[in-house]
Amino acid sequence: MPDTKIPITIKVNGKSYARSIEPRMLLMEFIREELDLTGTHIGCDTSYCGACTVLLNGAAVKSCTMFAVQADAGEILTVEGLEAGGQLSSLQKAFGDNYGLQCGYCTPGILMSTCQLLAENKSPTDGDIRKAIAGNTCRCTGYQNIYKAIHAAAESAKGAS
Amino acid sequence: MYPRAFHYHRAASLQEASTLLGQLGDEAKLLAGGQSLIPLMKLRFASPAHLVDLNFIAGLSSIKEEGSSLHFGPMTRHAEIEHSALAAKIPIVHDCAAGIADVQIRNRGTIGGSLAEADPSGDWANVLLALNTQVRIANAKSTRTLPLNEFIKDAYTNALAHDELISGVTVQIPAKNSGGAYFAFKRSAPVYPTASAAVQLAMEGNTCREAAIYLGCVGLVSVRAKEAEAALRGQPVNEKTIAAAAEAARAAADPQTDMRGSADYKRAIIAALVKRAIAAAAGRARGERVEVSHIYA
Image (cartoon, rainbow over the protein chains, first blue to last red):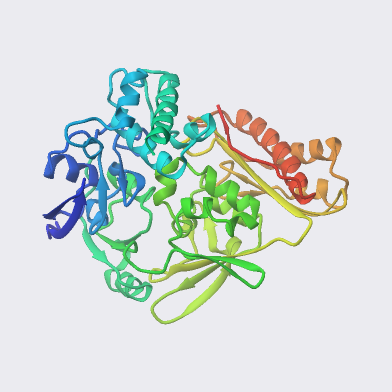
């Protein structure tokens, strides 16, 4: 069997990591096992649920459906990269304040999908929000508080700028 | 889940990718967006020994207007097409790009990869068959062009020789007074549709001059609903002719009962989707702004 390892360099949450990895290593395994950043969750492992969503060069991707070698020279943002100086970001705070989570398993993925949405759209409608997180499954909340949290995060981002 | 171990090759050009395919033989597969191939590899339905990655080749992702056509680079992602003002010149193309799966998958998946996979449940082939679409094909030495209906041979089967790949997709911009619409019925965003309908009409006043109607997920390839087209051609588009076309489409559909529903259920959905798509396509042909979004269970 092929066992050639491939050298890659990936920037994750602003820090550069150089590793040699098997080509079949999935991006989410690289993030969790090689970098020990376990905020990115493995849910369905079949590209359905979105728990593994991270940003690659600003675009939300399912890290269970990419090989880590494909992210070579790229910039990844995971949920760990949202806080600054030990303080939760306004997006994370909005999810807490609005009970936008219960068990929390899907939350990192939903936060990352929301990051792409709010970077592109400062005043999302309900429809925009539904479309933006359609690839993220939550089995606890029924989504209503998630929509509230995302509206609140958009409002607080406007207040801050 | 881990796929079988494989050798990874990062191509620097389409020529190099073609040369690699030629050298590596049948055990090599191209890696475009990977949104179908990687899940198939993780489930070990596919276990290629070699992957040739196209993602690091510069310049394969583009949307250009050339004469009366739009030209899509083979690695143009669904999301780029969704957000392209140029692509919106063909509204049914925007319907398709904006409705594929979810944001994450649209950020990765490519138009070339989708056509090459020839999945009967895929969105692109069904929509592009309703338009005049040419697939540009290249290997290391030469190029050729095939109409899309000749490119797709069967379910999961395309016309590419082993060392060939898609180098572009050219779609003719429909004439004035034309309109199209694409509707899919889905249980949720990330899954394949239960059924889908693509309708492209050319109108003269309220009379349908030409119609193309293709049905997705209800056959081994997209089903061209010729009787449904005939029910509209030369006729005014009204409730009666739309109903006749929808019934003809129901009869043309050849679905299989599976986890997404029974064959009869899918036929009923096809009739409803065709009705809505004709109404939206006719509205667009009249110059109306008609928003289309997929229907969820």
